[in-house]
Length: 168
Image (cartoon, rainbow, N blue to C red; front, side):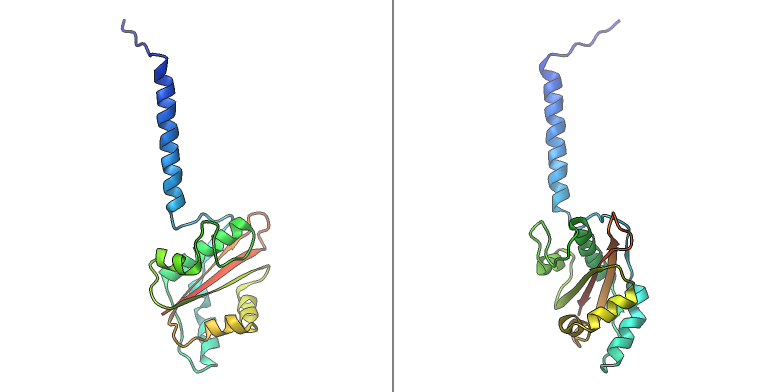
């Protein structure tokens, strides 16, 4: 019969190695550009294409094309807002809009509309079109692409955090 003996220092070293490993994973996770949404979330750009095309057509502008990269950036921001239960164009990790766009590979001019509320997509665009700054973003002739996403509040499924990212 073979017996294996451990010195008293081995369990401490193993525990220490595990703690160092977990700390390294946590640090790497903090560097990630994708946040985990609080509740159910979705990229809904395709369902907003006709609405945006109609709004822009009334101003003599061409339609916007849904863009997966911009939709991911929108979903990331909606998830951040839902996790913090507040609207913001910045994040808790010191990321402003410009740095978030860069991290998501978005180049050139971009803009973001955000909202929080218990309303559907049609009401969302109605609210934005009655707000000077949001309307200006939607009707900016320099933009040709967009991404729209929402994340539901984890405690109230009727409350959604919305983000629309527009880009060239």
